[in-house]
Image (tube, rainbow, N blue to C red):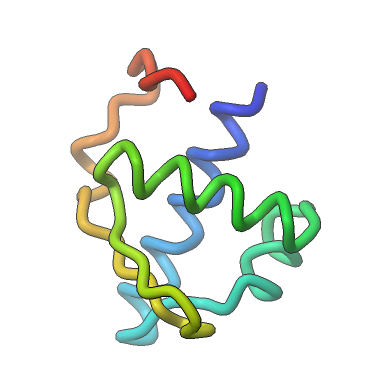
Length: 81
């Protein structure tokens, strides 16, 4: 279940970045995915460890998705955390 939420967070970040040219805030991600801000941060940390995005500490929009959505197989067995 948590992996699905992590994929949902990534999908939102990817789509938002594609549409706006910059990443969403933690609050925007939380509202879109129905999770609290601390949960968003944990999912983003996980995604950074997996190499799916980069993060800049201390910046509200300091993340950049790097793994294209079309490369993420819906049946993919995701890395552990």
